[in-house]
Length: 411
Ligand code: HEC
Ligand SMILES: [Cu+2]
Image (cartoon, rainbow, N blue to C red; front, side, top):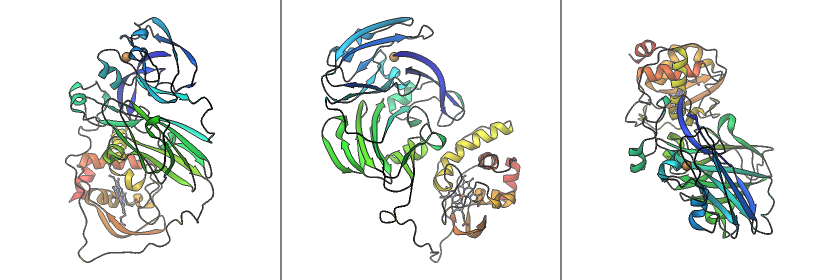
């Protein structure tokens, strides 16, 4: 296994210097069999600045191999261990200061399959949750240094699956087919938080509790402790998107802990009907609601069109994607699409909607919507950025919205 220190992306426009096992976060998945004798080579790339080592929780021996594998840049060390206990184990760097090595991305999973092997499934996925602590708040662009202060306070800016926001969502989503059996190898690198791992739209048929051999059945949410694991299995019964989240839910929708399994195949109406009816319910006195939010999403002023689009993208993920969906497709009958929306042709009307909220009947691409979009607490700059992002995404025709245009609509 090669240790590589390299710059990468946490979310669009936000860079971070990751320390990795094998070039990615999480580190390479290791798979051995109970009883195997494993000879482990750790190589620390000569371009690296730090010494590193590895503590594998699957190892019976001092430090899980940490001191035996202490390796300076440009060196290679070797040690061997017998995989005595079956289970799914975390490995991580344990070089001082340990917290910083882990916070920078040095963790992964090693599966010790029982002698007889695990039962066969159709799909296996590797998902590791972890947090990142940066000087700037969520979305603050540029190369972000590690924040010791936030790490000590255990207040991460990012809580993510597989090392970055969106690494398992959108175009990076994984897929399965109706009828397939899916197994998730779940890990938590921490460094601090416990994950309440949940899949929206599924129930785990089997959970290997804490990655050990005890089987639990019919589980909705499985705890994955920092430095621990879980194995969850389920059969997919109906098509659609299954959403992986840490059910400490602000982490999912505001800090990045969200992934997707796209399930294709035939509907199974006996299991799920889809919406059977939707009608207007407007009690007397209902008015435009305001969503609480203490501060606008991102601060500084955009200088170029590109800059505006990229800042707008961050705002979109935080403020709009929950209703209008990450790909702008909306939800039929509830949230109108922003992708190829003909409503956007009258740009001042659209700006007005985002700046002031919107309610009452509207028609988008020939479909009637009669609902409420809350007034979001976004400044003129933020509305301009997010609308510019929308115009330049989802196969819309392009264009730019300026803060001046927003100020006008606000009046
Ligand atoms: C809580 C859910 C919700 C959120 C969050 C939300 N919207 Fe909407 N949006 C709606 C609904 C519902 C409508 C339709 C309102 C109606 O029926 O009058 C709508 C309508 C729109 C429209 C006009 C119709 C269309 O499809 O073109 C635009 C543009 C729009 N939203 C943009 C945004 C943007 C940009 C954001 C983020 C800054 C956002 N919305 C956040 C629910 C939401
Ligand atoms: Cu290290």
